Length: 369
Image (cartoon, rainbow, N blue to C red; front, side, top):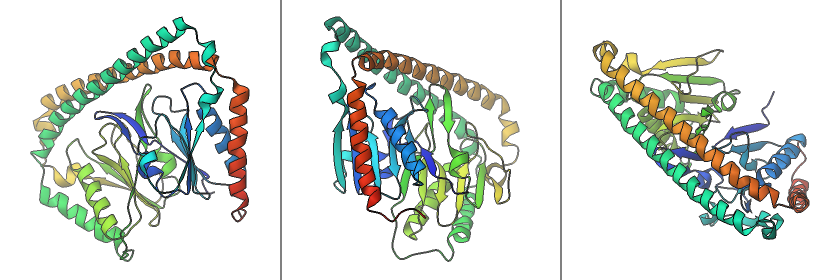
């Protein structure tokens, strides 16, 4: 069975603030519809409806989820049509692309200002200020958690055999890429497979790797070289012209958590908490960076110190998640005002307009076999 949809994030609430990967995720498309307008004006619902219709027609859809509400969509791409659609409130970087046709569709047309009273406007402004403060607190708390994580890593970095780590990277590069090199460098595609959400860490690893023949599960501790290994493999793939999807860490986007090589039918990923998985089928294997690169006995030698740091880190991550939940609650209050003042018959007209544009594009390509 061939998967007809892939699910990603291209926007994350991280220890380095709001981080966007839409510019890379939507690169190379022929057309992008940017849906503008405030929250609550039906953009996500329309995209979900259009995605379902494309899937019903046998087309492949890439779904980009909201890190605030993972059940909702912030964007979609129809792979065969090379057409994307995205919420203009979150697609930082796309309007600067310069390539492809960008069409703005204003869902604000469906919003009736006159249905918002002066008192409501004051409330919305007050809530918007609170939402901004809540996000600032989220980012500050995640940044504090990252500093604690750096303390945790230090024990392992100080006991690491870097020559062994380099050797692992070299061996994997040779094994994976031999016979697949090209003279033309390929720009990797940058994405998130997961996000920090108000419900905690959330990921799509299992569905993204479901049809691959080989999955390498990297095990290890904080600071045992997992992200560095992935960076070396990604860099070598780019130089050797091997197609690679680069998945950044949803907590610290400067770190990498997974690489997928579509043509090699292979994924290699950090399989530790909060996205810890274990081999469960043929083609799965474990690469343990702790046993291969860290001095034996390191866990035991610093057990008390590491346990204390781990407890502080877990508490700080829990706190950040609670602040994200506060941000979602405030955003929902603002959204309710816009929903109440939106004429959904106009939203339906916009949906039909977009559907018509997609139908026209579908008619111009070969019918799916």
